Length: 236
Image: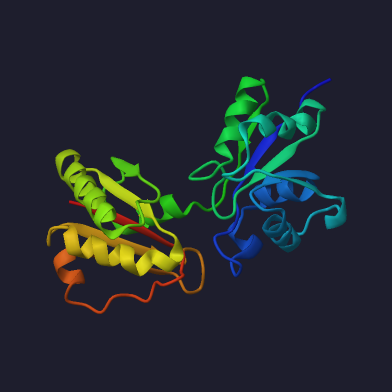
């Protein structure tokens, strides 16, 4: 029996973006599938409802894979693929397997000889890098830094030093309700000439992207970014 394919399906970056943020080929693939793996079945169904899927949502099977899923449960997620059915991997937002627990399933699929097919769609990390005007040849994504102020600021000093040494753009994300604390730490520890970009609500009508040297940031009113999905970038 031939094996199914694992399709990596990007998810719009906000509820107002909807299917308009996905190209026709990605939409066509997602609409025909009846098996999915996602961090949350509830949020996955909300996304699939906007496509909408060819089959009724009641007939769509959604298995959960989040940061708490034990490694011992991963092989069971391959069962539909091994039975010849195509499966879609969804993230909560943006591209699956990028800062996302789905990477573990992708790795397992490769080991099982299952074809992995990445589909085109929005990535907040790359969109922010594109729009920042910072170095797109050399960059590093660090995800979330520690939530404690002192440890967070120490990590930021280290990343700024790396950026200066290697001319490398440093990229971070933060839990939305801590965005303002993160930006305050950035502006507190970085040198005045270090360039910082703040990119919020990417692809949404409320999208806001600002890039300034730290010295200029300190002279302006800060953007209202509390609870807004935001990407932070710096280049020393």
